[in-house]
Image (cartoon, rainbow, N blue to C red):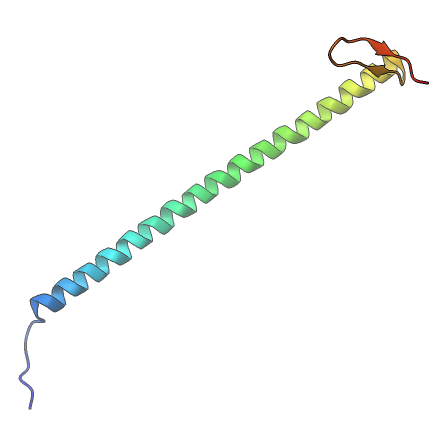
Length: 85
């Protein structure tokens, strides 16, 4: 019959402690990754909003220029109006 011990060996205790430490590290890293992902999603949403605002400004500016100058082309470097043919 095996002798019953009240404690595990030092080697076994060290292995359990190392295992628990590894679990703690991985859990922490997963939490950090989740927070970075959340921040990236928020940043992406903010950039999408800015993009939509820029598109709206582009349309408003285009409509304003078209109303004032018609369908003529505008040279973006010089501002010269190039009549449509």
